Image (cartoon, rainbow, N blue to C red; front, side, top):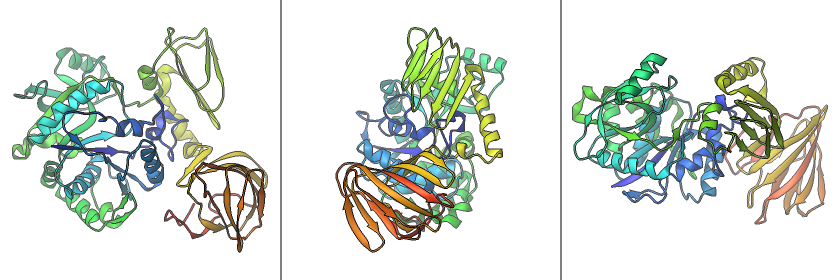
Length: 482
């Protein structure tokens, strides 16, 4: 038996604004440790002894996140991952169908399907549950993992478990999925011991999932198969045929298959494995506080934070010192371009702020001041009328596109490393404290030929400084627009 991780990484996580933005969502952020949530998900089976684990996770995501995901996987030593790019979002059932089609080209592994934005604090307990689920999945079952509830939560859907499954440990039959309950119903669920929170984590053989989706939603299976068959491959990326995939119905794994297993027992048994491993979907800032390490007063911090006479407060400092004085049950999130302060009981209202910003056309919901690119990143550190200043870092061996601008000129000053500069018809090297001027309309390119990151300061001046004023002539990353 071989287990292959399937990581679903398409969500935007707007309830964790301002740290999470549409172009850099929560799964790409290090919220509980040094690794991002995506990276933690990718290494969650490290050291697993219950079966052979394919070292190449299969990630289903969209075009916008592709380079960031590839880079984050490279940082943790993942070689040759499979990254399937969805041209449009169609929920989790088509995403898993694509993963199953990709996996079936190399065998018929047991797929461990995990959202990229969950926290699991007890990895040992998680792996024990996975071992149990894998045994059931290898025998043809469709497995879901039910979180053992520690409170009557009204924000989660629930799973009702049936009778124990013979020779599988704690696994039980899957009786039904139920929607988010009211408070009284949730209290009854928890008291009964028969209900679990729906984790959104699943296991099944790739062939079993394909048979199930073909049985319950043949249009989805057919559309995904057409899109995958007509795919193209670009480095780590699998690009689907867009028109074919757009024809797929949109549905979740739960609704498309798991809730309907009883209709077709010949496809395999539905099984729920209890999971008690410090799980959280980190749906809002109060959930992050709940799973974070805390001091003796219940305070949790990330970044440079000072607490004074404060209790049960979370401070997330992204770029500077934050001092919290006399705060109780508060959430404070600081980023270079936005600060959010909320009572812990009102963190769900962050989505209302995001909605207002979107209605006003503000870019603060879309991107951070620091923007990641396939070659590195840039930080817009200052701007005014007809000028903008950026700090640019280029990864070793990387290069920007060969490009020109219609409306701006640029000065480049090297502050660290060595730059290979193309400026008009000249290509030359610049060292630290050296600079060059690129007139408006000149073809130019920046590259890092060294083994250490290249850092420059770029000063732009002109009548229009938007990122869409880029005409690309050559590009290593297949981009046609900024």
